[in-house]
Length: 111
Image (cartoon, rainbow, N blue to C red; front, top):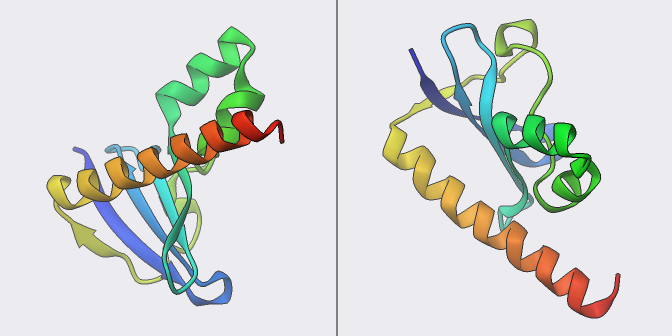
């Protein structure tokens, strides 16, 4: 069963949003950092794996980051707060759009 939750890590001033499968593996992950909750990651495991097979992993990670590579139960989730699928999807779509816009700006400016 898919589960959605968020967890705040004060030492990094980062909110982590997760979509997790029944085995605890992260399907999608969003990271929002700082007081303005700036999106720094909006990664999908399926997309990451496809990019790895296609040889475009560096481009994918530069745009969207990566998901954690261990099941959630193997590390401390820092007091997880359950989310609905809709709540996660709203954060996901906003973070994805921000990551894509940042990638377009980098390619436009040649950096």
